[in-house]
Amino acid sequence: MRASFVDGRAWPYCRSPSLASASSIGHIRAMAEPDESPRASNAPEITVSELSNALKRAIEDRFGYVRVRGEISGYRGTHSSGHAYFCLKDANARLDAVIWRSSLARMKVKPEEGLEVIATGRLTTFPGKSSYQIVIEQLELAGVGALMALLEARRKKLAEEGLFDAARKRKVPFLPRVVGVVTSPTGAVIRDILHRLADRFPMRVVVWPVRVQGETSALEVAAAIDGFNALRPGGPAPRPDVLIVARGGGSLEDLWGFNEEIVVRAAAKSAIPVIAAVGHETDWTLIDHVADLRAPTPTAAAEFAVPVRAELVASVAELEARRRGAIRRLSERRRADLRALVRALPSGEALIEGPRQRLDRGGETLAARVRGAIDFRALRLAGLARGLARHSPRAHLAGLTERVRGLAGRLERLGPILMDRPRRETEAAARGLAREGARIGRRRTEQADHLRRLAARLSRAYAEGVEMRRSRVAALWRHVGAVSYRGVLARGFALVRDEANRTLRRAAETHGGQNLTIEFADGALSAVVGIGPTPEAAVLPPSTPPSRMRRPRAGKEGEGQGSLF
Image 1 (cartoon, rainbow, N blue to C red):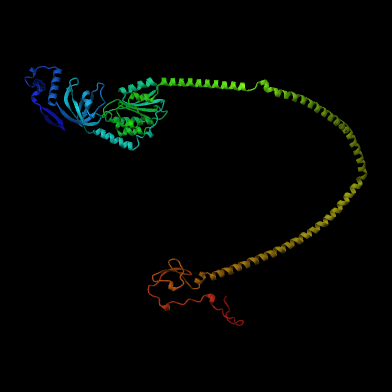
Image 2 (cartoon, rainbow, N blue to C red):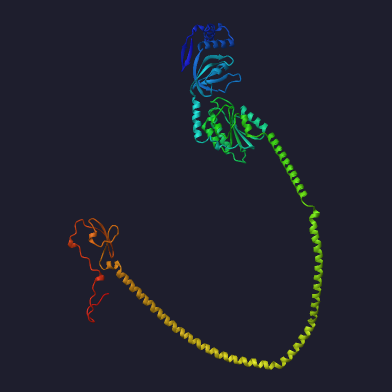
């Protein structure tokens, strides 16, 4: 009897149960019976291979052909032999599965990681591992796995926030000084990265050890990324220029820590460029989408982080050689251009022939002009010498001495005459000055008296003018008060206004219930017009305006009051 297990129930197929091996079942029962039986010591001994083969025949006979529903996990593509190895799992258990190359080629539905399928095949055992597995012959789609559905929903959510945009990704530095690595310190990944960095470009590497699998792996990876970003440049611990978040290959469940939202957001807000190297080339996690650079393997991440030192040295040497060659070729080209220019220029003798001839002519002309200038200066000097002889200081001094003697004689003769005349003129001028001073004093006294009289007149005129203008202003103010409406109010009248502050002159302009404002000389009051009709007798005739009042005729002198206007 074969059974097909679908949704936990066994469905029989047409096969006789007698096909089961009695000896195998007997051996299994003998091994399964407790030691309390007296026949336990008499049970036959069997080898491990015999027991494994017996179990295999029992399982194949009991579950020869089954249909199993589960999610594909741990699929890494076809093996080098062409076979496919993976697991089928659900919430509580997992089952190893294998698809032979011949069956895989005929299948329409190919296995994919996270795909929920219905597998049809034979259940058997693998004695080399003491495990059982299903040999799948046919695959049918049963829906997307729960983890894949969760992963897709999370990916869409983070993509809508813009965390996966290519515009926000930064360029990895070409030659970092310090490389930070977030990975397990005991795995092969860190050894591959360190070995690759040492081969390409030896530099300082700072490793932040974390768990890359398990419940706390996501928290530790996020804390490591934040910790590297919290390091200050120039501090005791060097701040990396680039981060490598790496892990080896594994199933979707093994890599799930790198799909957690806390890890993705930590990588997104990292100020240091991040290189993600999680799993193999076919493994994709959410940190691969948000990282600034995604490497297919940890070894490739080390290659992306640093260049090859030997290649850089060779490149620099090549550039230096090219620079020297370019400078040499430029110098040769400039030297050739200079030779061509030299050949095109005239010779030095030809260049100085004209200036030399002009110099010779200029020398001859200069000599002639110098001789002429010397002769002219000699003649002028001779003339000056003759003039100087005529006006020598000794002759001039003798003439002046003789003139002084003559003037002294004249002074002796004219001295008394010259002294008496100025004395008489001075006395006459003093007397005239005294008379003029007396006359000026009298005139100043008269002018002072005149000024005092003018000041007194000016003060009286000013006071009279001020008083006259004060009287005019007072009269005008009284006139303004007389013609102002407030003067009318002061004489016992009142001013009536409606709600719009318009002046009412007639009773017919009012209506019942209207609010009025009545202004008196000393204030205003509010009033309401009565609702009842106003009798005609209550309407007083308008008073005669003052302008139309007749003036009383003037009587005889002393009779009557007289006009008020």
